[in-house]
Image 1 (cartoon, rainbow, N blue to C red):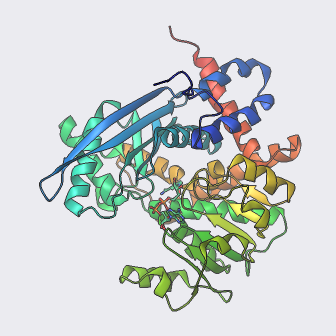
Image 2 (cartoon, helix red, strand yellow):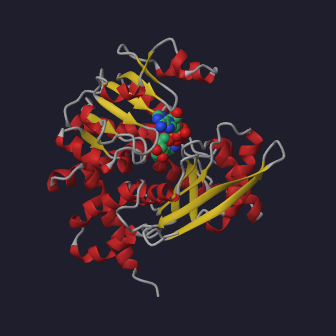
Image 3 (cartoon, rainbow, N blue to C red):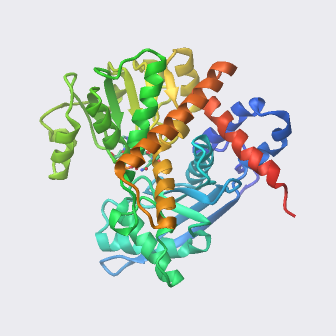
Length: 427
Ligand SMILES: NC(=O)c1ccc[n+]([C@@H]2O[C@H](COP(=O)([O-])OP(=O)(O)OC[C@H]3O[C@@H](n4cnc5c(N)ncnc54)[C@H](O)[C@@H]3O)[C@@H](O)[C@H]2O)c1
């Protein structure tokens, strides 16, 4: 067996999302001011990675093992912060990239966190609730050495929700011998969760889309929107666009794609799904082939599912004027270049989906002070932070003639590297 050719994680040939992230760092490097440049290397190297075995007893008495990860990419600006994903495609490369994007995102919106992310390589769909609880609790115990309200604070991501966060909080609290609400965010309201957190990522997608639309003279009222993913992010974004007078013309999830040029009512669709209906038997839309989703007539395309969806293969066919990345890493670097050439505006993930972590920050602050804010206060603060972040990124993009993605990385990397430089090297 020959192992010499296995790539380092610093290699650009390392396939997967981490490669996408490394190429984004290469793109921003020339725009980092000389005094900070020597520190860029820290962004290419996750601070620490924990790989854990998660064994659980299944309901049928058998024992199953799952691979679990927690990566703290960078903690220069504060404790690690980032979601936990349960998905059969979770890999170390993916968790590394997602943790790095959290470093960038937290700095773009200037919340005092570093970047972290976690995941378990598992398909949770066929699991019973009891199995899911055992999986969550064992994983939390295994990564316990990294966690804490001032060390690393998980949140929901793909296939994890308020209930999973409640189990994580309880497990950590049991291990600590005290109730520690601030160890995770995205918790149920009954447990120190924040009003507005459920919709926060989708709301942030809408706020950044509205700001971008204004810049390119695109009215939101009547704009046709296509959304990939109808989970936490996609469903909330669809609803908030609909409330603002936009028309939801297509939805794609992991199983199917539906279309209605006259508009889909996201409230009715949500109700249909909650009552056990499927996307395909929803009466208000027609099923189309998944590949056709990308070339539908629409003004705004919102990928809100998983990475690597917009590629060199479909980017040339996209008709939208604007892509607003609800998902993390939905666009490959090759597709980014094609969209730039075709004059399609891409509002990048590290800006567009930062509403979730922004309200997670509010939740964490509320937990610390045990003083809770109103939903109106939370939404107003969210709007202000997202609008200001969008303005700063847009300004740099115009000034330096950069894509919004590279401009967002400029804003973020300056903040992270400045903190890193001023802290200095230990010892
Ligand atoms: N939840 C948050 O607060 C948050 C914050 C920032 C970014 N994100 C990102 O948003 C994305 C979605 O997260 P979520 O929390 O909404 O997850 P979720 O599990 O609630 O929903 C995921 C949705 O994507 C669909 N999907 C999955 N794989 C697909 C595929 N291959 N093709 C089409 N559809 C597919 C699923 O059917 C589901 O509708 C992820 O990239 C996540 O990292 C989430």
